[in-house]
Image (cartoon, rainbow, N blue to C red; front, side, top):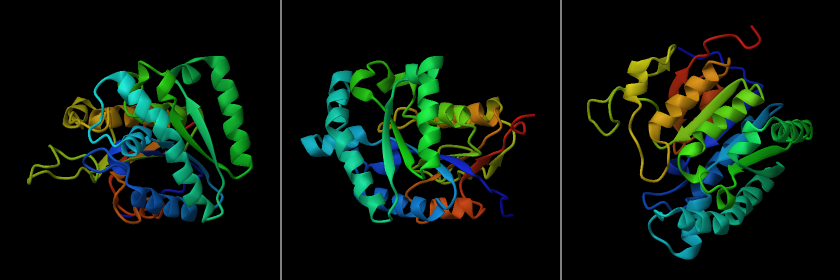
Length: 265
């Protein structure tokens, strides 16, 4: 059954597992594919991209084959990779005549009322100018946040979606959505829709990943946060062709989490 989605303001979270290969190295062809789709769906929509991938880009540049376990090693990779990642986004969006802006934030920027006010003003002006903000965590100075605070940007994307009153949060990963058991299990069944994120759903989403920080559990928590505030959330496979276009066109893609209330009510 087609989904009746007509979002005007969308947050798209592109996770580590979407942007990198099995070794954690950045896959530019994936970025190119997603950029092309975003350019096509942008028509009169406010879009925010919350991206991972800086560490993976830095690893590739530095010739590191496995994601560093120590925080400082991750910070170094992120510092090297952030510019590379944004250069890639800029080059690819430029082909579609779409302008982008980079915003690096820390947890305090969303938690601190004054800091958030400035961030919100910047985002609103960028929307007015038709520019897509690309947000990432400022890893080199966010010592604690590389790990648990933002959870591979899942929590960050949920916080941003709530703050800007987004209609839709799309969380892209490397699996087709939420399954009733580990997706590698041959008997696993995709859960197409969730109307209530209860303990059973949270238990099902307790898998993890060695590339991203959050795994499915963090994505479920992000969905729970935004649906409680009136935003629809969808978890889908970012490596699939036309995934974003199909979602916006209402196709039955991924797992949809319906909002618990209508925004403003």
